[in-house]
Image (cartoon, rainbow, N blue to C red):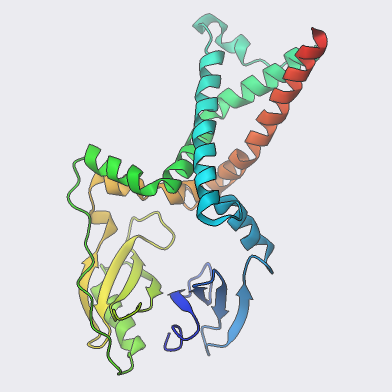
Length: 290
């Protein structure tokens, strides 16, 4: 922590059972991993040397930064329209419900249509959840504001005033102990953000009991020179709208619900390719028949 700023590091995740190492986030997008026992650098990951980070950047930004994220948001809105319009086109009479979900082997046009329609309808709730939460994450600020207004939440939490930087060194163990004392009982300290610019204020995210987010959305702001908590924000004490907005990421990423929900999210990631393929094959088979 003492050398974080000089190394271009902006925040550091504390070790956990899921990842028993210090994970540091650099300003250039790299991730640095340190041995929790002696601080030795273990690994540096970036989109150039790590396939998982490359895929993550592709998924969240299309490898194009903010512009790519906006393209994904627009694509998500189009996807929601396609899903809901497909539901409208399928909607049968009650007496024909079972028949409308039957899978057929032939002829080709009927086969591809039945596969596309039946699986799409059966897994539509899952697809809607995953797609909607992705769109909500891209447009998080207007979405959160709309939810807070809908549920008449109180004002957003405001961070405390800046603290002037000094030349004295920060006692980081004392800062972490102060944060542990200030956090509600049963909480887990997760991410430490180093001071920025002339503001010495330190913020530490923690996961309060009941939070779904893997790193929590609760925050403790501390005066690092006095090793004293200045303000504590418990995300579980927010209004309904704010709490709903903070379920989007853990739902979308499969961080809640155990292995069953992780597998469901994985299936939802593969299903659009199946729907695209069967939709195309149905279109081609119908054109050939004509």
